[in-house]
Image 1 (cartoon, rainbow, N blue to C red):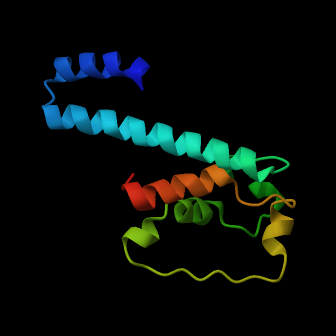
Image 2: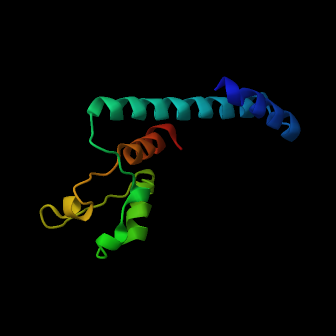
Length: 119
């Protein structure tokens, strides 16, 4: 965070941010950095054979999946709106669709961060 502090201070001066706005930006950057470090550490501790994010998923491999709908669900807006979702499929379909690779931990962390930190 210290490497970004000077840049934020310059931006705050140019745009006449209040102290609260400046502090909000500094703390937002700190929370994001901590979440990223947390995900990196937990991924390493999990000894996963590889990490794959939603952005790396090959939707052409499973054309029955609605890519736009999956990406919308990944934003977790349904939680903020108090909506429920129900996912049904035949056994093993997600595993087959992802070629045996589960939803990436970084995707989970991004959704978790949005849920608990309002991002």
